Image 1: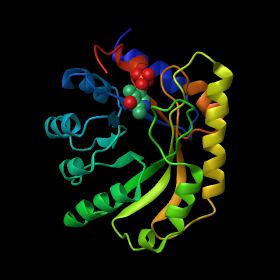
Image 2: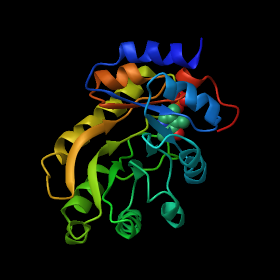
Image 3: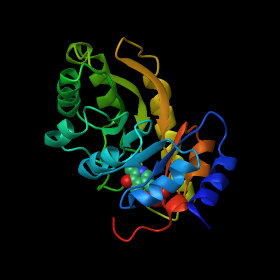
Length: 222
Ligand SMILES: *Cc1c(COP(=O)(O)O)cnc(C)c1O
């Protein structure tokens, strides 16, 4: 199947309130352009440098999402154009994003990454840490970022019940944090679900799925 057919198939399965991020990491611009020509405008990358290069080469109406772990010293390479940063897991990182966004007179939308997986390897903050971050005065002072939701990654496992339990935990974290609405915090997005598990994620309340291999085919490396 072509990229175009894959996209069409996935889109036909997504309810209207669910946004599709086409995860294009490791794929060449020519393949991203196939998705673009089929109407896709939101692309997700997990390496800042690769995303910046693709941004340079591709049409400027694309919204670029950083879905990977973010190193603070690289935020400056995406601050001018990035549309949503999914993996914000510390106040220090948020402060750096705010600082770089200010240079371009922008407000950068971010998601707080919540640790839902039982595996140790996954990044993210606890629900309690996220709550105290949002309620702090230091956070209120950041004028160039906006927290618009949460993001999570389930454990890499075949155990469907485990994955669903973790998705439900993210949704309930979202629901409890949602009461906290301020000028720079307005939670609307729950980013969860990938190629192998997006249907379950949607049933658990996902509003944004990040799908790579089901659109572009398997990747050669991670
Ligand atoms: C690579 C990646 C995805 C997409 O994974 P697929 O299984 O190819 O759909 C989603 N989210 C994150 C954070 C990723 O790094």
